[in-house]
Length: 434
Ligand code: HDL
Ligand code: ZN
View (tube, rainbow, N blue to C red):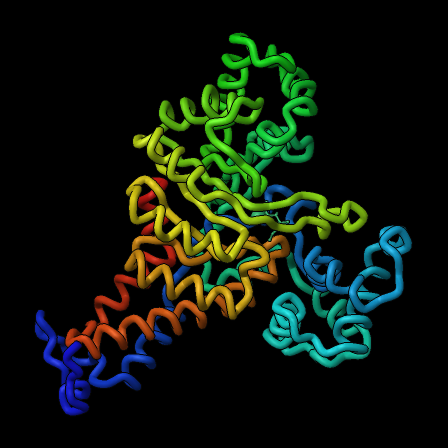
């Protein structure tokens, strides 16, 4: 590799004639990358947030922030309280205990605890407070609609992918009410309860007047497709999504294997809709912790190669929960153009791992991937989840640009802007044609 001299590095000649304001040296380049990634708006493709029209389902404020299941799991590591004692407390007592345990008696060093600190700091609240009086007063004084606008602006997020369950009573009510959903909030039709819990799903489908039975006969297959057609009509989802266990296999002689093959994939083809596979979750490793009790396992990534090869006309969004699987996913994505890796999911959304995953993606895929989603469950989380991610993605992108400079090619400010737009929204929008 010919190393450009310092002089050349300071004044590299751009092939297309770098315009003024383009990086003249690595310090200038770093500044440009940081500025551009801060100002580039984000399409957050996977969250558990809800549009304001979903009322109580839309969570925000300090008591919800502290009752995030990530923090509940961490609290049990320090506190002597048992899960059953904890679950018996009412929400504000739970958040008092979590604050006392994780933020007062111990140093908040984890990603999830630092996130709460970052949110309080953003609103000028005392991050070393001995109790939650001040923050509760602050959040109680917020107007919900104004608060949403304020958070979206701070986080520079323009669009939110929700997670929508067509079997959830509270959600069904809103969708069937004909309420006009805020256009910045987009549905994602989640198939977990159908694909991972078919026996329990059957009576719920029957309740919505679909003639299904536990055994997957032709009528049931047809009716389940009609169910998806109707909900696609109602939700206009960005994609169909499902989380899958670490031992997910495909093709597979199982209820899930048959439903994927005979219902989900034909529906994706007929509607031209993408399928999001989030693979590697081991649900209820410790059931006593409820939502906080899930874990992860490593998957045989060849399952993704097989499903992509078998369905070349379906566009797949895929992420894994195991760090090793993310590297393997990059390699499979090099083999299949209908595979779009996305996000640093859940237990991977930590600085040290986001840095590694993002760098290996640039090294193996260029800009042909979607670096992150927030998975936010509480609105305020958008602030820290995207602040942390922007910094980490900027670090990785800068390192790649710096390597390019050293190899003899400058990047212009325009190119950085274009790359950032692709990574933060463009790749996703073109993938789902939205
Ligand atoms: O299945 C999923 O979408 C996961 O993201 C789970 O909701 C998980 O509980 C979570 O919140 N991860 O961040
Ligand atoms: Zn999620």
